[in-house]
Length: 231
Image 1 (cartoon, rainbow, N blue to C red):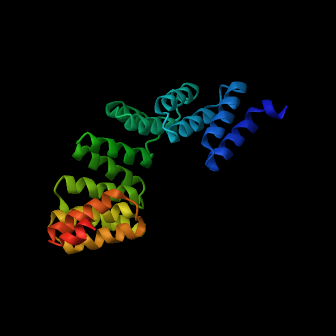
Image 2: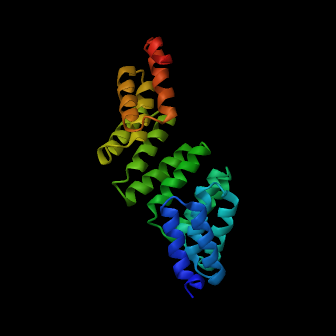
Image 3: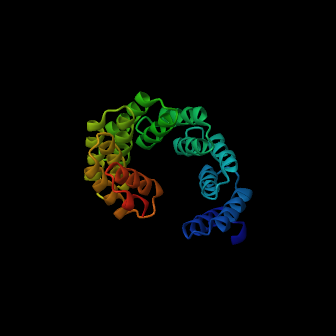
């Protein structure tokens, strides 16, 4: 009976989620688990879908179930850690990232994500080391260069911050975060015209990102271009 086929229900669930019908997809994944509770991949995909619709605590339960079935499931630890970050359980998130990295020492995504949480905790030097480790494993990782640029700015190492953001942009010319972070470092160096150009480029790539509009407005005020700042 196809309706009782856990593999078919799993594929159907993934298909619905990929089409943006997340809740329908969740229903199919739950049915798949009912017929085959021991498939860790179904549990992690259910957790990812629950995270998408902001059911974060339910997502944690499903990640834990995936880990219970497969204790060496590095992706489950990584995704669980990202969800713990969303729940502002930052110390627990670090523990979960460390577990993912222990299982897979080349897990550059986990090192990058761990850096983000260390930044949230204002443990900037440790965050920097985590981004550097991600880049050591995967040197063309634009997100890690952008995040590293952000941390270097927090450490008041502005010139190095700009170099790191430029590296991210070189790898991915559409990296609006890197342009925004570069703008922030240029602003702190009082290189306002260059900062403005960087924010403009970021907005060209992503016109709907509120932070960039705010940063651009601040620089226009620094340039005493007040009418543009409020427009």
